[in-house]
Length: 263
Image 1 (cartoon, rainbow, N blue to C red):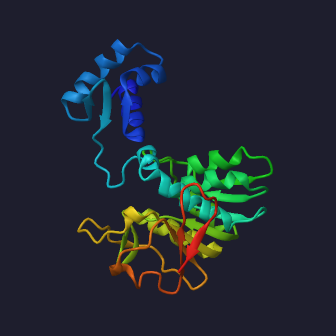
Image 2: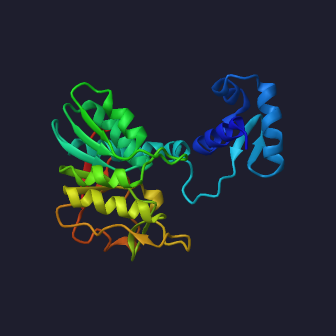
């Protein structure tokens, strides 16, 4: 595979869908060159082409990070604002790599003098440019579909920090099994972050509540009595026992910063 092919494949897999013109701009070549390079990639199934754009055919269970950021956006903004309301200036926080966590990072830009540790390049970039913040990027090797690090260095950095709050997300929520993810490394990272935190916030939008057969098999750590589940809608009746010892907070709306109702 040529360097151009690798760059194109990585870019499309990261964004989910990219126009030919945008790829030409990114690679600093002509759109004709992009079309020539991608033609065999489309023919052999590495990419799909539709209406002047290239679409990822990557067989991953989680959609690419940028695409996930655009899904159920209003709910994720509401959740993020509700979480940010609980995090005062000067806090120390660990934040995972989920798309909802990405919105939490954006909401935290209004806070001052934060200490942040994360294994997400997106979250590190979002908060590191705010004056007064100290941001620790955990890890050195980043996954190409979400810019997340799960190498040995990532866990070492997390283990060396102590924080007041860990902000976690989940791939799906099962009424019996609870909060779940697809990859072992994500479950391990969640455990590492809860171990260094005094309190955990689970930020998950209502579309994740599903008992479908596709539910991943890996559970996240159980939440304690002082932890908080933040979502945008009250879960269905089947999830009545889900909070367990944790408290449930329903974010009131996408434009009400930090507001929410407890259950």
